[in-house]
Image (cartoon, rainbow, N blue to C red):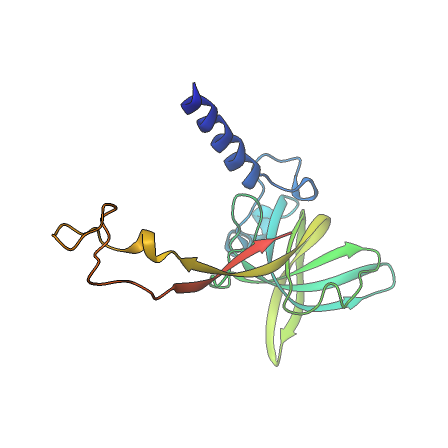
Length: 189
């Protein structure tokens, strides 16, 4: 009985962690989530729904909308950009209305859902570039959360099988007083 309850709690937790935010849900069951698909076949994908994300490269508020230039990155199943992944290229996201440039600052992670509407000519520095354009219907800003994860020396040691062992399998002659740790980065809403 306890095993089934434990398994049920784990499954609910796992499903809860992988759910897509409501703002990124599209009418299409399988929106385009890889910018390279659009770059390879722009005419065939015009008008299709997309869910794309990555890092904000620039933001410009216009009279009726905000133009955001994005560096596209692969997305997880729940729409989060994959940290430290290779860029898929760049695209332009047009969002209706005004967006605060300090909130949507260069370097922030953003995922958008909407419709691929065509291309726009522009430059990246002095390099001419054709940007795919997305008319955005929903968006989600993300934050990178850093945590220090400590490795417990009592769980990371090798078990002891000699006369120098205590009852729990710890080697009494080789105590492990060092604590190892690492920085873990997660993308959170």
